Image (cartoon, rainbow over all chains, first blue to last red; front, side):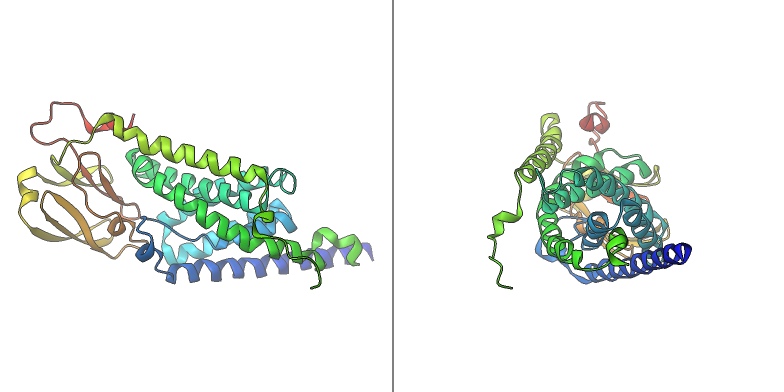
Length: 184
Length: 138
């Protein structure tokens, strides 16, 4: 009985993670259609909507779920954007995840999800431009591209954090893997 | 639904401000860095692909209007120049960061297409006194 229960929980976790991957993919695709650069002329600027999914997974599931969702999303997106872009997404995504995970221990006390999201956006930009300047061996990229991205990232970070907050709060009603004991 | 409605600022904690301030500080630091090294007006602009020099435009070349289409690193670019500056006018790379980067002319300015490994960078002009542009970023 016990193994069956464990199996069911594993299946539920896998299904949930897969759903979140597809959600993150849809968000990542949709944001490519938003011509943000026409409104704010900052090269490389993105809303970072897929970060909402990372935040939700981090706060409601586990850091390993967030990591798995991130990696699968980036791998699938590389089919559209190419291998080089995948490298930046990896650099940005992993750095953002680590920073947000560390900050998640402060969440609720000295920090909100919005603060996590702002730090995540900044870390994402630093990771992405960092990998780019490494790949091209051109440190000037950091000075040119990073400052405007960091400043706009504050705004997009507030937006994605504000969007993720209510989702995280309201998801407590769902029987998620973390709450398996109460659920079964 | 009968719960009280918190005001927008209740979503924040004091630590959020610390995070925002830290990010602004880093951005300001990176922004100020090149200012100290000075940015004299245009010298030459070089086009490189993965470190290999593809083309150079002298300060004189950039004064005349011109354009050129070029295929590099698997992508196709249209370069446009005039008035002492040059830009990626069009590109078929995925993110188009190079096009969004706009004009390159002032020394130390740069436009990069990372998927193609292509960089357009303003360097010291022919009269540059040997201080390589790389000094700017140190």
